[in-house]
Image: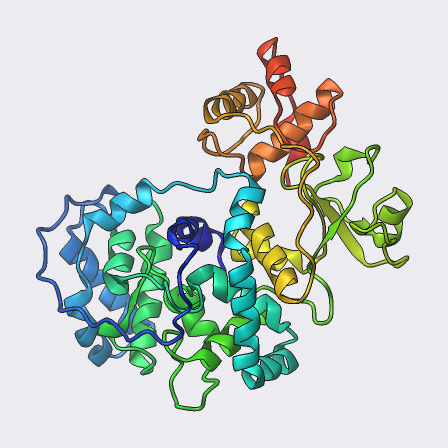
Length: 432
C-alpha cells in the first residue's frame, strides 16, 4: 500500500500483544453516533474555511466522484472532527528497535503456527488466490498475522471520523480527502455500513488493514455473498490481499522474496544495499552461501544483499519481490520482518542468532549522528534518532568517505570520526 499509508499505520503494530489470540470473526462494533463536537480552529490550508464548510466541499467532491446522496446521508452522523486523532497522527513514533528484537516478537513461533493453521483452515481460498494471482499462501498469511493477528486486533475507532479529521488537518489533507471519498464509495456499493466501519486511528479497515482507496480498488468478494467484507470474511480477506499484492504491488509469480544467507567477512560491503542488484551467481562468486554453507544457485536471478543490522547481524538475500514488502510498509524493520515471517510460515528455519550482540548507538547519539549528517549536506528526513532509509544511505556514504566497512550501520567509530570534523559531502551521490 501507499508508503505514506503504512508509515502512519506502522505504530499500530507496536500495540499488538504477543499473547493475542487469533479470533477470526470478531463481531462488529456499532457505536452510537457521537454528538458533533465544537468545531476546531479553521485550518490555514483550507483558506480559513471552517470544518463544516470544508465538510460540505468534501461531500460535493464525493457526489462529483459518483457517490450517491443516500450514502452521504448515511455517513453524515459519523463525519465529525476529532482533535485527538490529529494529535495522535502528529505525535506518532516510528520503529526504533533492533530488527532482531522486533522480529523476535512479531514473527514469533505462535504467529508462524497460527499462519500455517489459517492456511489449512482456508485451503480452498488460498489455493484459488495463488492460482488467480500468483501470490503464495505464506505471503498473504504473514501480512494477515502482522496487521491484525488474523482479525483479533483491527482497531476500535470510527473510521469516518478518523479520515475526515485527518483530511481537515493540513499535513496530508489531499490524501485523506481522497480516502474519505473512497470510504463513502465502500458504503455506497454496500460492502460496509458507516457503523461497521471501525478500525485504526489512521483510517485503515479490515484484517489486513486496507485504506479505503485500496478497499475500493482491490477488495474482492471471495465467499460469494455479494459483499466485499474484509472485517469478517476470511475468504474475502485472502482474495483481496492477494489481489492487492499481485496487481497493486506487482508481485512476480513463482519467484522468491527473502532468504537468509551467510556472508563472508571480506564481502564488498558497499554493495550490500537494496539499490544494488546482482545475479545470484555473482553473489556466490563473492562467497555468499546459505546459512548451512550450501551454495547459492548458479543462475541470473537478480538479488540484493540486505543487512538490517549491518555486517554483524542477520543477512538476507532480497529478491525483486521484496519490493512489494517495502511498498506495503516503507519501514525496513517492518518489511524485513514481514518477509521473514512469510518465509517461516512457508517452512524456512529460524534465522541464526548473531555470533555476538550487535552494538546499537543509544537514541541521543543516533540523533547526534543525524545532526552531523545534516551538517555534512545530507537529507536524512526527520532528525528523530531513528535509523530510516535516508539515514542509512547517508551513513553508507560517510563510511565510504572514511574508509570504514560500508554496511549502512551507524557505529561509535563513525560518530567519533564525524565529531572530529565533518567535511561537506555530496548527497546527490547517494540518492536512492
